[in-house]
Amino acid sequence: MLKIFKKNLESQYKERLKRAFPKELHLDLKEVLKILPFQNNKVKLCDGVVHQVDNLIHDNELDLKLGHETLTIPYRLYFDEPSPELEAALTDKQKDILHCIYLRHHNGYLREKRLDLLSENSENWTIPFVIQLIGEYVYELLPIIDKKINEGTLDFYAEFRDENPKYWQQTESRMISYWNEYYRYKFPKLKEYLGFEIVDRIKKRTHNKT
Image (cartoon, rainbow, N blue to C red; front, side, top):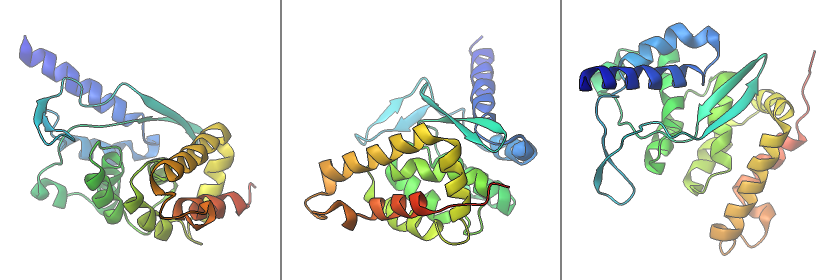
């Protein structure tokens, strides 16, 4: 009975992660999902203590538009990383999918690691995962994001901004709130804060909608 319950739970996790990526990636995503350690629900949380986590994917989600699809991104994940051997066998695209999944992990250090590993030539489907980090509290992510939002990718971000105006406004507001709460002492003027510079860069970008 317990075995059946765990298998059903694993199927639910996989189904939820499928909804976070465009359909064109689902074959590659299937290979990524095979190596995720859903069976282990003993997780070290922020207090440094190992806890039994009943739900490895938080119930909260983000519904975002990307092109002609609506993607549903998990707010937080709690499962561990796969073994390095299994990860090494993935293709470059599959590795980028894996990195995006772990950008929603509860551990900020792991999010930073995976963001740094994300390909510089990443495609527009990575944007919902990257842009969410702008409105979070971990400053160390911002210099990495700053490099990834460049002349080669700015049009993707501008298009995503226009497709998701309410979400974009919320992201900008969260960025300002975290600056005010945690970083104002270091950057007295909002314009000096890297999060603001990144948001301003995306706001000023126009793109060809044809």
